[in-house]
Image (cartoon, rainbow, N blue to C red):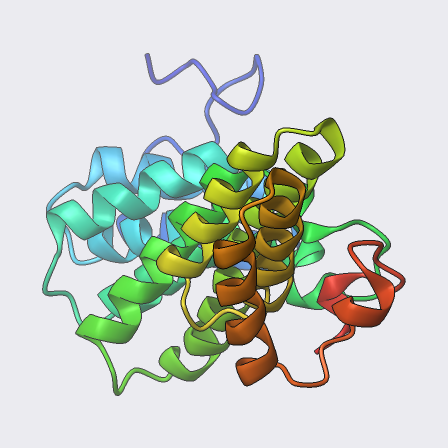
Length: 249
């Protein structure tokens, strides 16, 4: 078995290496950006020395290394495993933050505001999973150094998820499914009461109720919209977006 290599078909260069040598080699590979190689060293370290002082550190770093190596599934699994095995570890707040980042998909998130892609077109499950991880971090570790950034991302995700609901409601309006549109917009408002997307959700409700001839409900929604957004652009522009929502704030 020692003659087989997980790096190729030749002898295993790491045979007989100490835990410290495996760990230092993993760190060197990370510095070089050789993420696949770093992951292999950490995997070998954990399997060969499961109870040594480096094993826990290897488990902690594997999530990040997998993520940088474009293996988000393995990265999330590593994060979940670390949280399960070490719920009281001093760095578990970092693992929650990392889990949130992986799901958040930074390239299409806050760092992607210059992109032309609407973030609400992304996978809603990933957004919810990111929200859950960041929320757990903020609630359990309010003094963590990662909490301020997690809070900002939470605010972004709330509006993204609310906007996903409103996008569906707008689609129903276009299809003439006005009851479904009103219900979906109302769901967005109830689920995400502080989201900026609720301005559009209220206008969707006004439009849907007006089409249905439900004047009392239309007037109620109109009153709430005028009270909370007296200068709403939707009275002028309607439901046609001239600027992408994620570039408005």
